[in-house]
Amino acid sequence: MTRKGNRRNGQPILIRDNKSNGLERIPLDAKTFNEDWIQKLINNNPEILPINEIDSAFTPVISIGREISTTAGYIDNLFISPEGYLTIVETKLWRNPEARREVVGQILDYAKELNKWSFTDLDNAVKLYNQTYNKNSDGLITTVKKFNELDEADESYFIDNVSRNLKRGRFLLLIVGDGIRESLEEMVEYLTQTPQLYFTLALVELLVYKLNQDDSSLIVIPQLVTRTREITRAIVKIEGSYTADLKVSIKTDLGTESTKQQNQSYKRLTITAEDFFEQLAYNTNKETVDFAQQVIKDSEELGLYIEWNSGSFSIKLPDPQGSGIKIGIVNIDRGGLFYLGYSRGQFEKLQLPLEICYSFAADTAKLLPGIKQRPDKPHIWNKYSTIGDLKKVYPQFMERVKKYIDDIINEGQKISH
Image 1 (tube, one colour):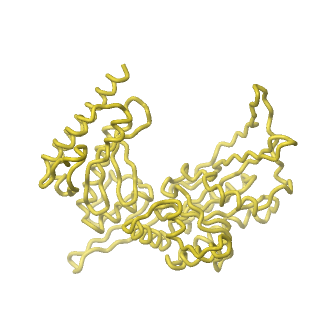
Image 2 (tube, rainbow, N blue to C red):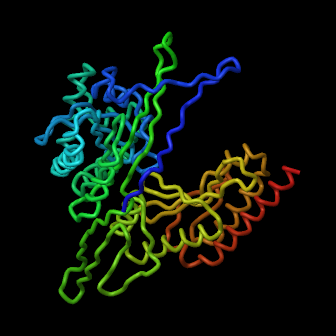
Image 3 (tube, rainbow, N blue to C red):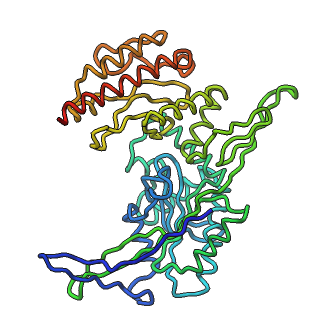
């Protein structure tokens, strides 16, 4: 399925000294720009790409190369997120009608080539790019570290996730140009109906305006035109050592079907969530995965927010007073451990009594074996607990969560009045 942008391009107006001035859009057939200019623009300013509107797993984007050589040609721009998700960008100016017909096939060829790469192949490509353009020999991890801190545990996860995404072809493909035509949108619509497309693909149009004749500054407005929304990817998993014990499950973006049981309530996951549950299943078992999904469902019904992190998810309460601050309640990691969210900082910002989070930590610690409230940081526990232990006291734990939410709401209302 694709979503087409409803493009109603209004004329940007610059207000300066209480006077309005209409900006002049640079014509599509002007010779002012070329594709190299676009490549440099997004390489130096990757935030210009509206990737967060497509899938937040691919953000924040870190540039790891331009003109990356593959057997299918040169990838214009290549980006990666701290979670190990790759974005492939093909830039096009639409002066050449032939290019409009070929660009989608070209970017798919790049994706198919990267699908054959290993982590080492990608690392070597980044080193070659840095040697050519940046006069250093930094590999992929060193490059990412310049923008995002990675400790040893994160490095291992990052390498595994990059390798997994390369193997499965989990890429975001962006075609970026200055005047995307409706015919190209229809081409993408056609391609997304074919079973050969295993990638999320989007079209981004850059509208370029200049201020006036005397000012060389430009205003660039990125616009998401079309994106694929539902692309079914199937993974066949066989578990068990003996014939009688074999269990076959088929996982797609739309859920999981099993030869023994079908979960009708399983909803479509983001890529980040899908990876998390896959790793949780590997580290624990199906029952733990089912329970973790139930925790998410129940939490969302309470109005809580699920935030996906590197190898974990956090359950948070959005400030009922509308400040935008989210108060951490519980974190669950891919190893099957869970712990209280770090809430003290949020309480102090919201001027809520710390006794509320101290009491929550003390009461929930009593429900779990071997868990105590931490003396020096009374808003958290002295160590992690397990999802298995949580399951045994789940009703009592959730009742205490409800009281915690009520206490926060009531105190927040007192402060606001």
